[in-house]
Length: 105
Picture 1 (spheres, one colour):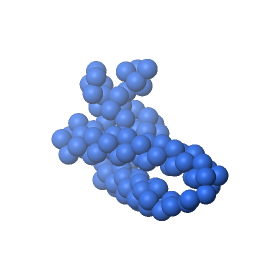
Picture 2 (picture 1 turned 180 degrees about the vertical axis):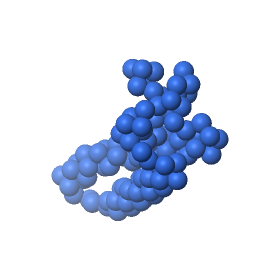
Picture 3 (picture 1 turned 90 degrees about the vertical axis):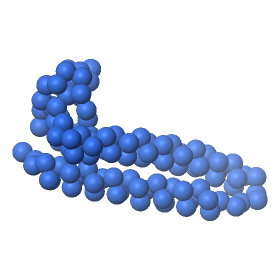
């Protein structure tokens, strides 16, 4: 079973990875200066994918921040809806989840 300090480290490490990915995405989006219309069209498609990745990373960071707050408040591992304990297997799969399996469905 994962301890609270180990879980905190796992969440913080994932958060740092996501922040680094977002910075890479932002740098890549800022680097496009193609004048050729065909290349610009390809870049636009790639930009849409990159923007989607950036939004997904931002959403996951928000969930991780909420989980870290629950850790600080001693509420981590308990369902935000029903108050039941979230199974360790579920927390291993989705460490930032605020809901038990039943409430998540």
